[in-house]
Picture 1 (cartoon, rainbow, N blue to C red):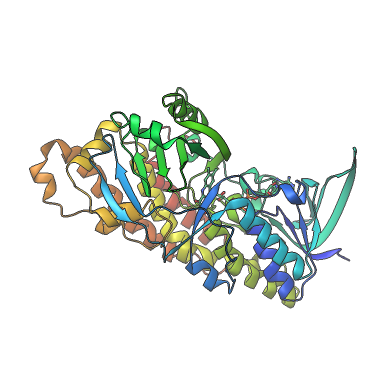
Picture 2: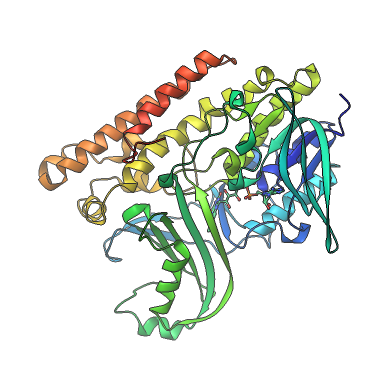
Length: 464
Ligand SMILES: Cc1cc2nc3c(=O)[nH]c(=O)nc-3n(C[C@H](O)[C@H](O)[C@H](O)COP(=O)(O)OP(=O)(O)OC[C@H]3O[C@@H](n4cnc5c(N)ncnc54)[C@H](O)[C@@H]3O)c2cc1C
């Protein structure tokens, strides 16, 4: 078969843009397809990313102008702003960026490396030849008209974010298509507002906040709320909420918060979307096919941060794709190295976070509050589950010590569940360490069954 490209990547978000750059540097003919106009790519929110990811993929971080003001301290609380766990911001471990500016920077690097970029190309269909992915079909905009297009390549990549436009169409034997449970969706919203500082002082009784500090409330339904009072007289507001009946969306919660206070003057920017919070898809590769980033559910389950994971997996996927093309074997057998490389390292740790995310998600507000009030958890280790600075397995250390339970009898039921969750995180790490190193359907199915049965106890609906 004669192909138009070596690789077609669908979606020019951070994951797709960085993978296209790495592959083009390797000398491959890469097409990057994106449904939006070039200048509209990226989102109007801010992101934090582990700095070390940039070193891992030998990427120079962009110079100034791309970063908002970062907090000096974080204060975590359940109900009362004055009863908090405090953490100094670890600026040396984290980059703060505007998502859209970072995304544009990554696209410009890809273009410099010779990536063939097609914006306003809305991909709708995965083209298969026998049991291999070999192309995409879609519509492209030309002025006011739309035209059908078809492109072919040796390897097709889905980096379309939570749309998962191609993953959803993969045949059963790719073992990629996975129904996403309601409990695994959240809505997230962020906006930055200019405020009147004198009016903030007047509200001290109901909202006591100080410049330089980000206040992070962890609440029921895994909801979170971050209010960062910046020294430039703006408020950075971040809201997240599980999806479900009678649960206001993150945007609704943000609006409700703003309606309660008179100090907001003008929105500088803002936006949000629904995110999938869960462990990554069990397999992220098929014959002639790979997926990564939000499309492969690679976000940090406790925070919803996905940019670093997309970059990390781009590095591993690029190696597997390079081997596949160089060897002339684009089948799942060669691409499996991507699965193995990701799942046994970052995938394993994020799966352990996912157990803990599900455990926290089912706590009532009262239970969450009692955990904070009793100082049952060690500050830094618990908080690090909500931070992007370094993704390491540290769940085991989050207790000050188990004897705390004895002095807080009302915490025993939660404590029992917590101990179970911690045990399960260890089991999950072990299971991910046993991820099949080579493609073998039976081994993979056995592995996935074991993982699914461990997770099942954290889903009350237990269907699917
Ligand atoms: C409020 C909020 C705050 C966040 N904060 C952080 C944070 O602090 N740190 C962090 O790491 N992450 C954060 N995230 C998550 C982060 O935005 C995502 O994880 C990240 O953007 C995922 O990158 P991606 O490249 O996989 O997907 P995306 O960035 O979603 O990119 C996918 C691209 O594919 C394109 N596309 C989709 N469908 C098609 C199609 N059919 N044809 C062609 N193109 C298509 C889209 O237009 C888009 O450009 C936050 C998210 C929200 C909502």
